[in-house]
Length: 217
Image (cartoon, rainbow, N blue to C red; front, side, top):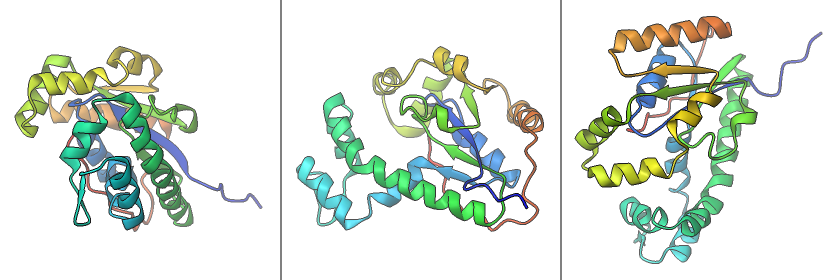
């Protein structure tokens, strides 16, 4: 008798800011796949009082009356790679632990594949842990327009965040499949369908999936 694998196969999902990764995550959910959103898990983790205490000690003033001021934290952490490394050292082990627990729950449900939606998948060295990787991409001008329209960030702020990520061209080189999100939704859906067919991914017969709210990226 063949034993069940300890975790489902992993389909990584990533892309540069404004590429449309959240849209693709929604399409994958529509196919019946469980999508584990690393950003959503990170937000969940930072509700833990112990984590808040560590963040507050490392970044004075960003936790007020037990509530994390995410904008203030982003302003100080993302301005300095060394400070960002401090934040990541606090949150990343907890995020990985929670993601693993959600994976194990999917394995218990008999799911053969799960999607790991990770904005900094390549930057975090997680590529080797994936069985395949989808990279969502679009031209920089289009990505910039999308993010400034929805977020209130200036073009300079968006470009600064984009510059801290791996260049889109390098992500494309490392992808199993590149999804070009410069057209309409129907075209993007066709690309997702084609990638899943090639990978042989079928929707679970029965699923009580963990629902993660997609982040606006």
